Length: 146
Image (cartoon, rainbow, N blue to C red):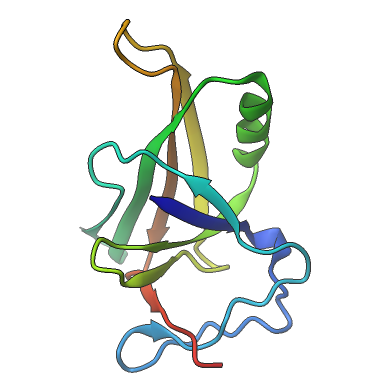
């Protein structure tokens, strides 16, 4: 599976339109002031993406998580993943049915986390990565028409 992601610092806030259609799709393409969507191949480890609702005294929240495994521990990859842990992100992905989704907004971006480890003799030397979110709204479909 391929996950696309972009640091929120790359988003052109003057052109950013956080609007959804009445069918739950994001209406405007994400505008970039620098860069573009980055891609990360993931080996699924359980559910690649899930979003759970939680009720609190302050109202409803939706906790989201994109998770997977990036194989082969490498010093250069460790350094890049460490830098990613300091940033906030928007994430795009397609579910198993081919539906594209946009996870996160500028107001409620995703945080990144990576754990490294070696496995037993038949396992992978790998990173387990996660993009984590907490939002007042569920993720939107991503089929922009503008």
